[in-house]
Image (tube, rainbow, N blue to C red; front, side, top):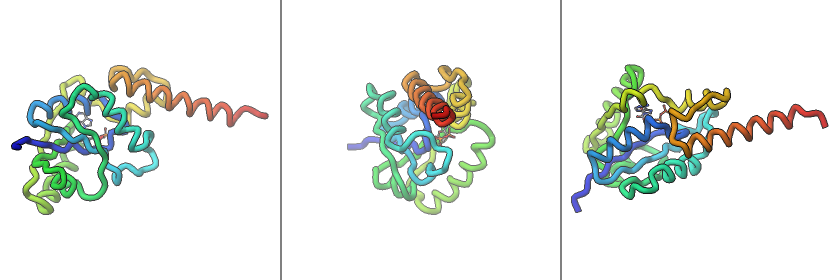
Amino acid sequence: MNETTAVYPGSFDPLTRGHEDIIRRGLRLVDRLVVAVAETATQGKDSLFSIPEREDLIRTVFREEPRVEVTSFSGLLVDFARERGARLILRGLRAVSDFEYEFQMVGMNRSLNDDVEMVFLMADAKNQAIASKLVKEIARLGGDIEGFVPPMVAEALLERFRDARENHRKARTPR
Ligand code: ADP
């Protein structure tokens, strides 16, 4: 078998149209794409969805694409890529701000494992500015997020913040 596999790592909290765009572009380049939700980098306090929830959302959005596999990983990305037999690591580039960080990642990853090549793609102009962090903020404030995330993810966000609002309301209601 001579299949090309790429790993696309990220926090995906949650998957946006930006990520979706990069995945679809990536599929034009490789036979198999492993979307890998990073466990380590995502334990920050502002994570909204659990790792399995994020995985499920990605899986549901790409349920008709057998070439996409969704999983999570911890530890070193280059080790994970090697384990999966992936020669490429896919990343998306948004703005100059992403570049600085990615530039360092390439350097460090190369010294760890020079067999894996990092590949950078840009999303369509309309999806370039989308960031999970901002989408969560907009959803939290009750704004319209339909254009930024797949419909399934929009539903999950609505639900999550509906629950949060309910709990908030209950906590404030005197018994
Ligand atoms: P974030 O939480 O910042 O939205 P992730 O860590 O989940 O991003 O991102 C995973 C990868 O997807 C990163 O390489 C990131 O640069 C890329 N990415 C995220 N959003 C976009 C977008 N709108 N356009 C292009 N690449 C993106």
